[in-house]
Amino acid sequence: MRNLLHLPRRRALLLYAFADILCLGLGMGVPIFCIALGVPVGWYLGRRLAANSLRLDLLLDKMFFWAAVTSALTFVCMLVLWGPQALKLRATEAELANFGIPMILYRPRASFVGWLLLMIFVSPFLQFLCTLFGAQLGVRWHMKALRREGDPA
Image (cartoon, one colour):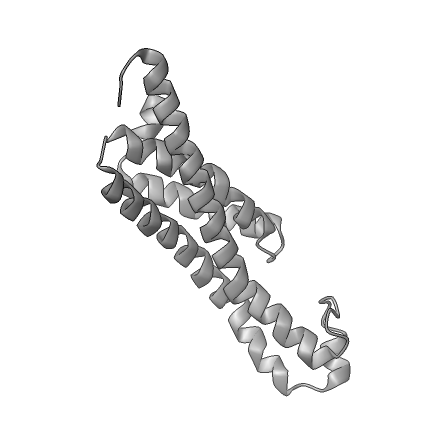
């Protein structure tokens, strides 16, 4: 575990990019697994950043920054995957109804727009929130481990 916490930043980011794309493929383009990946990635971030014993304000800034980086990668993947589908907004209602997305807003065009907004914008934001949550857990875990060892930090 200690080796994992001391991976070079570039290698850790490449490993995350691979895992994010794998999770996107597992969800067949729906980033539910990418959102769920946010919690363990955040936990890793929190543990890694807390191990460097930063001041609290710097720790929170870095947690926010790296959560935004992970979310931005998912956003770019979603934009590449679902962005070209926006051209289908010119299609007829019948073609949109047969696209295969859930008709959550009862009308095919409204449902299609809602689906694209959900996939491209809302999903990366949810992943951002899950990553921040996981980072908080990782920092708490690290602090409890230090207390158990007798370090007052």
